[in-house]
Amino acid sequence: MKLRPIAGIVLRQIYLMRGSPVRLFPMVTWVAIDIVLWGFITRYLNTVSGAGVDFVPTLLGGVLLWDFCTRIMQGVTTAFLEDVWSRNFLNLFSSPLSISEYILGLVITSVATSSIGVVVMLLLATGIFHLQFFSMGLPLIGFLTVLFVFGISLGIFGSAIVLRLGPASEWLLWPLPALLSPFAAVFYPLAVLPQWMQWVAHALPPAYVFEGMRSLLAGRPFPGILLLQGSLVAAFELLLAAYFYGRVYGHAVRTGLLARYSAESVA
Amino acid sequence: MPMPLTHPKSDRPALRVSRLHKVYGSVVALDDVSFTVGRGEIVGLLGPNGAGKTTTINMVLGVLAATTGSVEISGIDIAKQRARALARTNFAAVYATLPGNLTVVENLRFFGLLYSIASLRSRVEELLQDFDLAHLRHTKCGLLSSGEQTRAALAKALLNHPQLLLLDEPTASLDPSAAQLIRAKIKGLAAADDCGILWTSHNMHEVAEVCDRVLFLSRGKVLLEGNPQTLPREHGSATLEELFIRVAREPLAHKAEHA
Image (tube, rainbow over all chains, first blue to last red; front, top):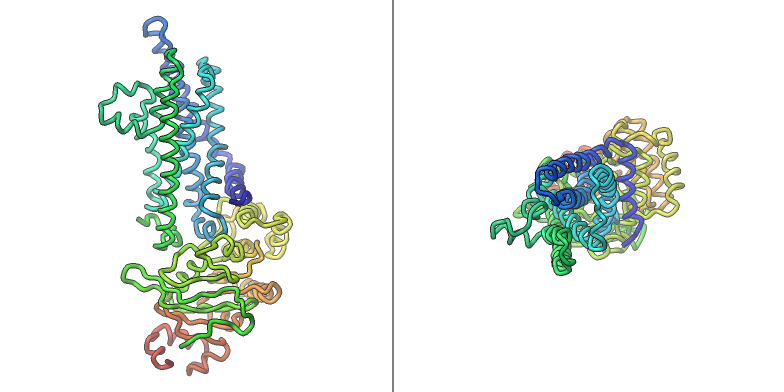
């Protein structure tokens, strides 16, 4: 694996931001709206609930962590879609760039772009709503890592779907986090879900993270087993997503789909 | 017509295509295609629409896998060492413009990194001067005229001093004056850099002017190969264009006639 091609993929995104600063707007706006909206909801719930109950860490913390995961996914897919929108596949994949270099470039790009959103969320949540995000201590690093890996997996999986089904299928990507969120149990314990939804939830690493987060905030001991389970599922799904992307790319090269990837739909 | 697999100019060609075969379901897109492009040689790949020219180019570029057969670039099998082979290749085509939301200089730097070009900054400056793009360096490629886009794409195609250059109708959108300059530049490149060039075009006058050798493809097969100056007479045509039209309209009859 060479560094320069990876740097090229990242540099392209920097050029795009520099050339069109308006791209920063959605990175900041949606997360800011989420935090402000949920911040006031939690503040209201605190006033109407029984004394001693603080919804800020559970609800606002949940929003922040779920948005982090979603932004990571969208960082990967948006960087990939830049090549779809600019019909750049032929130039890109006829270069010595390998698939692993390309994916790594997308991941680094995603880390950079999603960091902007996370910083904004942290500033708002801490500054306005007094969320003590780091009060969870070291386990937070583990939770964030699991969500990061899952976000990357979703991004790679989503990119593979677009590569396989054609540019029009990008509309399948955007609602993906919303479709998964009920199963991820961001705001409620897994136990409230019907059994079949719990089975699905066990295949989603965020479900372990949010269950662990709630346990920690309730003052129970560090849920190491949940973090371990979430990490294993996340690692397995990352490998699965990478394998899936490789298979789709191989199919695209065999069938000629990659070479004529400019039609509205190539499914 | 049988073809030699080697070219007299070099025993280690820039490109060696051996028994390339591509099947989509029941459709045969390429049928046992073999040819070489020597170093410093410009080979014209001719044929009517759907003959298999772009399919061949896509296979050489590694974006389309052959059903059977092999492609070697400077002796490196693209199926086995893709990155090494493609580092020695580049291409420009009218249907593969550079991303329109990046400026000319940004595009050249971006692709320069993909090709791991050493001294990238100076190489980019050199190409901006060579292709008269210096004054457009900060213009987004999507805002360039088609002629300027072609020059930018050619500049990108030469970033890595390719040993094999694939040009799919490189002058299709240029005015006659600009096209002549580009042809002269590419001919100079082949001679000076010892770069093998595979050139597709529907402009037979251009092909006759530029190419050392031509290959006629029709329905996925190579029907004819030879010197563009002498080939028409050898096959009873006055010009390359006349020969092209005959081959395009009656490819199978023509093949039987000259078998």
